[in-house]
Amino acid sequence: MKILAGIYEQVLKRNPGEPEFHQAVKEVLESLEPVAERHPEYVKAGIFDRIVEPERQIIFRVPWVDDNGTVHVNRGFRVEFNSAIGPYKGGLRFHPSVNLGIIKFLGFEQVFKNSLTTLPMGGGKGGSDFDPKGKSDMEIMRFCQSFMTELFRHIGPDTDVPAGDIGVGAREIGYMFGMYKKLRNEFTGVLTGKGIPYGGSLVRTQATGYGLCYFVEEALKAKGLSFEGKTVVISGSGNVAIYAAEKAQQLGAKVVALNDSNGYIYDENGVNLDTVKLIKEVQRGRISEYVKHHPHAQYTVGSRGIWTIPCDIALPCATQNELLGEDAEILIKNGCIAVGEGANMPSTPDAVDLFIKNKIIFAPGKAANAGGVATSGLEMSQNSLRLSWTFEEVDERLKVIMKNIYKNSSEAAAEYGDPDNLVLGANIAGFKKVAAAMYAQGVV
Image (cartoon, rainbow, N blue to C red; front, top):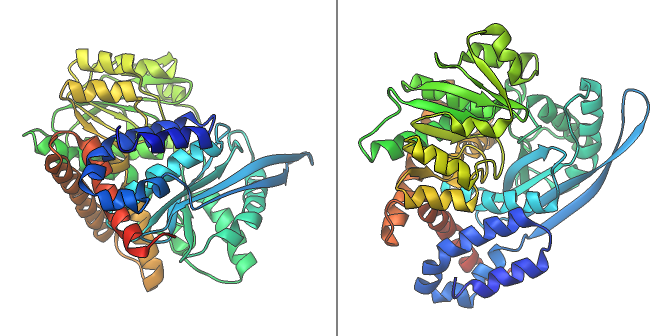
């Protein structure tokens, strides 16, 4: 970085102890250096300085009472990062690893991801260090209600529209929406990921996983390839991983492995998704239980070992920085031809560099996993129109959006001299729309 180096140094000084945020900013600014050279007016207007600084950071206390009557206190966050092209939009994450730096990294990525969808959505993110695992439904309800008693004053259908993320599914969204509706005495589309009976959108559950495969399919098609007959390894076993596996299977691939934080399963015959859905969606169990239903499959303790399984396509769908440089080396050695990020920043910078250097088709998360927020945007549209679209209508709109994200990212990469670099292309394509809006609106 030349022109933008000073901005990154300022980010490091202002945001100590936030490595995930530093990592995300560094990657984006490196990609945007040629844009800064081509658009000196953006440099003069401070667009790059402003785009790395959140418009608003909210931190609050979340007290709640467990089933034994014990009082607990967690910390809640909402980072409203950029509203240049629309209301803030981004998920809520409930996980013990959550801190301000992680929320800022996710919110920053969300700005570009939302821009890539072409829908009018700004970027934001939120959550809490609360851990839903092992909690009863009543404990989760009490936490969600307490969380919303503060968050409600900062959000709204034309201000900030949160959604789900890790640890926040339909159950948690339902509890939060109920409390928001009670506090505000109004029924609006303020949260997405809602249940179908009260304003949710069909395909939302499947959207991130399906969208990932639609994007990767386009990238493969550009090289004369497809999912048909390919072996696929997917990390994670939550919502994104399950539906990425489902769509990959529909496109003709064989998915042989999934994992969770404890370990991974390998099924050479192809993972049975009905069993996985029973374990994860109904029983809320661990992936290790898969082998009880399918004794021929293997379970191995230690989740990262999943990348040692030979595959044609790898889809990391669990969490940030889960795929390291050494894992990338193994995947490349084993003949992997494509990597698509279903999670947010799951590949470390050295892993990304190796994929690009070795001409592996690499689909970065801010582009490849934008299907979830795209369908959230479609849910917002349905709520505003007071109507519902069919599964087929929403799925077709999602497919068109993901094809356009690939097209725009690919064209931006080519325009800036590196046609196969979708990391560069996605960052530039996402930035251009937000930067133009910020420039038009003046210094605010």
